[in-house]
Length: 345
Image (tube, rainbow, N blue to C red; front, side):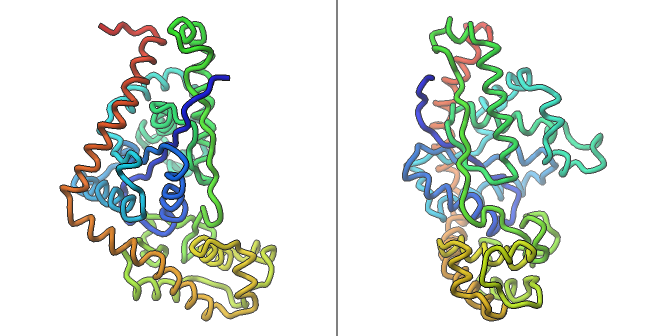
């Protein structure tokens, strides 16, 4: 088996209202990974337009996500931070992968079925082909690892299938062009720890979402201490005290969610949290959760608000990151063109 340079790729959509779920499920993990890997962290603005976005708002939220990356501790000098649309190779490789992937594979994507709902004929082709672009995002850098939550595991499996099929379909050409037996790595998932899937504060069975009509369903990264306290006070719970064992949380989604959030913010396990709070009323636990959330999120929110005011700085980070990303992706794309049989003159 060929040895590929270890490289991490991941991204966040710039669709507004970055929240606790984005932070715990993705961004805080990105910060930890930069200590071990070469990392590319993308603001995936091309994915965002699979559903219509207000152009002015898209620019604002692209800069906001970039600010959140930096405020959370991602070093733009050590890592590559960029927005997807500035590296044309993402779209270029996506077309080649469209011709490798199979319609049946895309038809099995559960997230498309959920997002499209019953009106499947009326959604954009982009929403349907989204997983192929995601595969191109990863494979343009021949990334070996991708941090994913539960809702993206199926897409990563598809990216692996596409990479494998490309390697098989063009095996002879890959060898003939001097790339050995395999051109694309099969990217491995980096599964996150506790509270990867942060749920709504209004319904513990639904994922915390930017698009939920109720702002009380989520903790936004820019919420102040009073707002965080108010949202946790109003968070849905059940009438029983917190249990002493993790097993008892399984039938109590709201309790499980709040315990999971506390665990992730504190770096503890859910079992450790229940050792401290088992038998306590929710009012006491919510006070402790509010205090911890303000302690952890307050500095991030304040720094994010400060950085957002400096659009020139944010744009300089994106410009530098895009140039560095393009340098890697362009080499991949040249090789793909040679392998596929396109004439480069």
